[in-house]
Image (cartoon, rainbow, N blue to C red):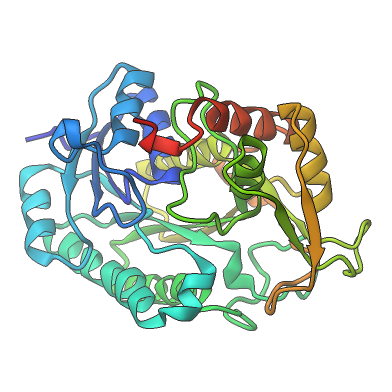
Length: 353
């Protein structure tokens, strides 16, 4: 059995954000039990089902990561994990995450993201584990009513897709859970737009199929996997007509999770924190920055707006800086340089072999 005082259960552990979190957790001396069902990840057939991303996490850190293959809706498998390990707290990253796909497959998204979260919480409650960090999203804010978006901004209004709805629904469930039982300590982390990769280039974002997010698509154009980038909308009321978003380096995001865990040293109830840079960059600014980092030309074509997209979104992370002593350290050049290192070293992602 793993020792409980510093053992963190990370769901979706083989995924992009969770794998970077695990690097930072291992480097900080935590023990990690990772769980994934490979819905968004590549399995390494040479390692009896051990994910390639976590194999590389172990190479980066020189430390072992325990892994269990399990689905969040599999009560029996989750019960076995909680019985085998003395868990200190949970970081819940497991989710289906493609916005477009969520519109096509809403039931699958609600079953996985909402149903899976409820099941995990019931198993955790029965095991007496009541420290919980939820991987939420700035999509819960819907269409911004003011900028920068802070944690007091209304949520749940104008969410344009089932993916965003699932994040909002789980937040509501967690708030109700805390009201019913004050023994729970819960942190909701609302991410803006994670990009980049670990500076080693060994782990990064590896979309299965065409990327849904801007920067992995840009990187795949640069490496020749995609012919061109479609820029959706060039007539927004922004500096160059293209959409503006708050991009955060995934390593800064991962460090935000480690900072959040330190709050569990004393009981606090339920807290909400934005994780972002507080600065917005347009699509074309991101393309230009990546061209500079990669030395490659990025072919792009301007096309009509996508339904549901908003012109400008960026957040304030002042509360996280004040209460978690956390803030972003990496800038746009770091994001693009590290993303290019990952993509150039792994042109086909983890499936290079």
